[in-house]
Image (cartoon, rainbow, N blue to C red; front, side, top):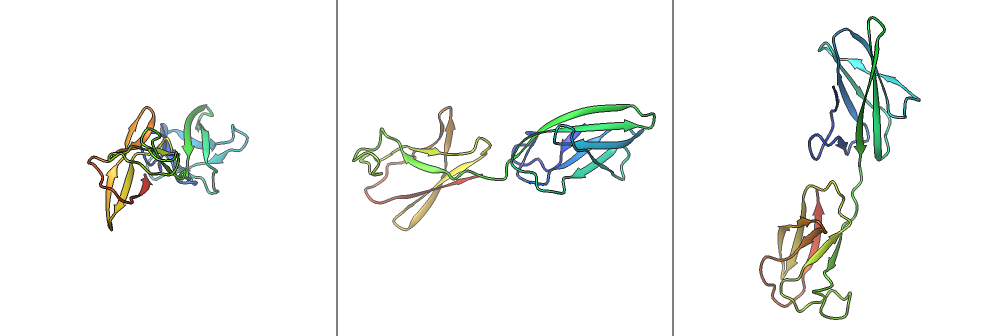
Length: 177
């Protein structure tokens, strides 16, 4: 069994925001060497056996750039038999900068001026990473800020106020987790 120890975000998706991925390999107790590679087998590093028999650990010492990887694991037992397994994982340490766009159907003035006569306008939230688990919109109006959860559907993330807005200026900001 191969496990990405610092898998964060959605459990079990093999995605981490840590550029130093940590792996745990569980093998039969007669295995005396576990080697790992993330460059297609060009370079191999040796895992360290933990105090628990059959459990080996390795943390990548150098920074691994963002991207999709295949971890190759080679386990060798006392008799010299070798088995190779793989684990696909992703490193994603950056978050795109979200953009708020007034829906064109609600943009009632000059297109792109962010003015509307609709009291419940819809906003498209663009550049939201696919691995986002929660998106919120904070709305400031008249010195009061209220935060709402955005909605995700097949077309992406959107926000529409739950109640009618009064005339005035509103400032929106987006937070992504």
